Amino acid sequence: MMDKEIKREIMLDHYNHPNNKQTVNDERYKSVHNASDSCIDDITVFMLAEDGKIKDVKFDGIGCTICTASTDIMCDLVTGKDLSEAKAIINEYYKMVDEKPFDEDALEEANAFDTLYQQANRIKCGTIGIRAIEDLINEYDK
Image (cartoon, rainbow, N blue to C red; front, side, top):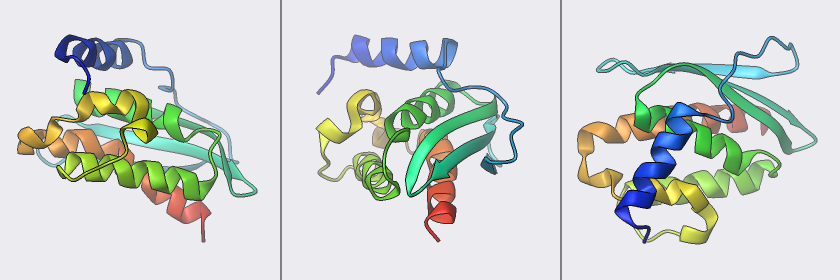
């Protein structure tokens, strides 16, 4: 378990200085748009995968701290992974958010969201970008 202050720092760092936030205008990338009907979260995720491996993931749009940080962290986690490895990481994230046993090592900085389940109204914020990434992985995996 991470210290509460470290979790806060991770989230704020990825919100204020996201590594992967940018619009992609490259036809090789596929994209998925996800928006919340109950809050400000409205993002598009862009992914480039080749030969079963994720080469790059970016996102753009407007999101709260939880949405932006969780999406940015997941972009970092899945970039460079095989599609099956990325699916496994996302499954561990969902287990964590659902308050089920999960592999902390697989999630790295995403462990900052390990108490998200305690705020049911924020779960959507913490999964909207992850669902878009998952949709793109599934599209590439067809």
